[in-house]
Image (cartoon, rainbow, N blue to C red; front, side):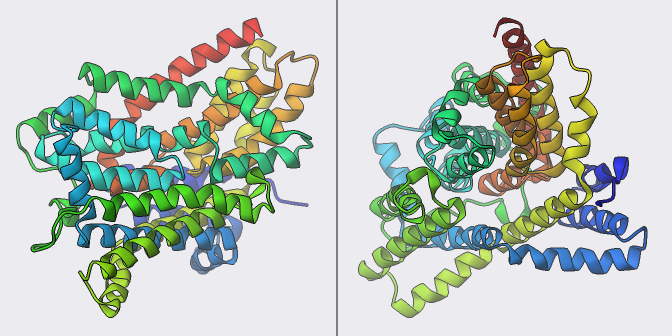
Length: 469
């Protein structure tokens, strides 16, 4: 019978979050959280816990899905290297300039928002493409990288879950099938209008762009950027590294065609891996195939334009992949921490605290809050969905609660995105920071008031819906 670790189960994520906020060392903080968790699992023996923590990082690769996602992270680095070296990003920026897009502070932010909405194939790709294109524009116009990181994050996971023709949709449909739904696609689509947080955070980010108003730490970051102060960014990301190398002519198709290839490949791969059923495909496999196809097209264009030889393209591939090695390491640590939290029962423990003695009208808001706490503590929205969907579905079937299944499912999905946004140990938060070239803790601090604002409005909405539906 599994051990009930109680409050000890929340210690690892809390340790990782607290250390990350205090030390600003995300790598060490994540590993410290893993170590604390494995020490608890080892009955308090820190040496056995250290050995188990190292082993937890290695066993991440036992899951093919995890391995594909980590490999995808490295491939994105290679893809960006090819699009930069071939003048693709510079050409795309020039194309936008000729069309007078992104030439004003408001225009650059609108461009970032629209890119986030249009590139919905996968949340990580969304952020990385957005950051790669918009970072030089934001720097040139003296907009803060914290604002870019916020726009990357606010239009990544929320868009991917609202337009589920991607790995997110495939994953959620699989979860619903596991709960006995005969028509899981229909069930997912019926829940999307009730994903209040995703809808609100998209609306809030657009409103802030259109009005030009900010509040909290973001307003201070914007004032600093307008004054010409250097960005609060990692040392290797303080310069504009997206321009074409000297002597290379800007060439927009070298960026546009690989991105279009990824967008086209994602549903095709879902269809192939799902044996003709788009919604039954493997999300991680499809993402991996999509970025591999995009990278191949980018490399072929560079070689075809005689910008480099085949041997040079291979060297650039590994150089680009190596540039995102820190991201791959962060993904490994985040997966390992999530596995330790699962072994400790962190999610079910948090959920159980709020499951009993709840007013039926407050059930949607309660599920949103609990899903948010679980996602914040574990750093994963997908893991939260795996924990919370089996809780929400039986509650929807309970006649004493009187809540509709689409409403409760939408509350769980929104809560998972909310907690994921607010958590400093979330992989999507980490990727948004890296994509924008922004200090990670600075991104967390500036984004949190906006996430809390949208979250508070979502809670009010769920309370109202709980009274009326």
